[in-house]
Length: 366
View (cartoon, rainbow, N blue to C red):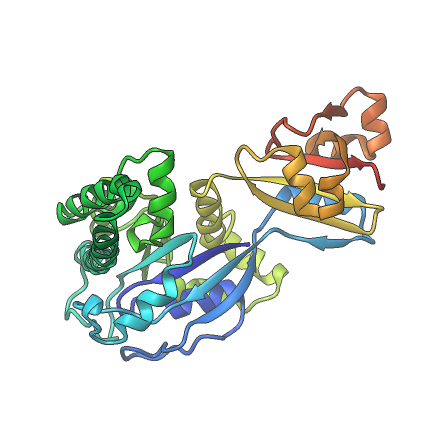
């Protein structure tokens, strides 16, 4: 399961956004710092129109969406890497995340700001600095241990040279995700669980309701945030408004979105951007008309690996995969009709799963 961590300064709207994603109030929301102490977690389904259309063919089947685990983490402040505020707890809670959602405050109002003014570009710099300094501490500690052992073990000298280069990279103010590494160095880098190695999405939390024309100041912020060295995606939303919409029924949500001229919630944009950033593809399975399911797998996943994801026995007994496009199955109505129309293709175990395929695994035990 993919994991996303909500990070940001206190009172940036992380918990409000988390509650909107969860569609109920789980994380406590209050207008003062450190409302969130222990992280809250929620499994969030990826909206998927293709899955909806596929499920319409099998209305009696259970629909199972692809999911993302979202963790709401305590806010951090300057010098969090030294333990200020709830820093050490915060930093420990995000090491295992696949992606970080930086929630940056772009709204005013009476809610106090720990930096006493609204400036999301400055807040981003604070977040980046705190995570980078903590990473530098982690790498220097590892380097000290490797250097001590390398005196009697020449096999560790290559790793030591890598760590020297990584220290220099971080000291230059660059995140670990921007460092060029080879295959062996990638293993060493991944083993450090560095905070700045995680990909990130910048979430600009505004008080804007009409997104057809963003205020000039918000537009400048979006341009500045998207112009970072790694060019992170920027999603502009209004977490408080999304939370209000999330409490409505699906019919009421559609009506409210329509009145605002929106085709869909900005939360859908956030999830779609995240899927793309993590380079995931979606394939689908229909099991005996009983379960209609979407699966997220990394780009490049083979059909044999996909079979293992479905069930270990399928992976071990893999013979072939029968695949068709969701669009073809929806139009033609059944897998048999797709076969007769020449829309079903046979794939070997080492071929790669493509986004939007319905996959049927043929295996020796099935």
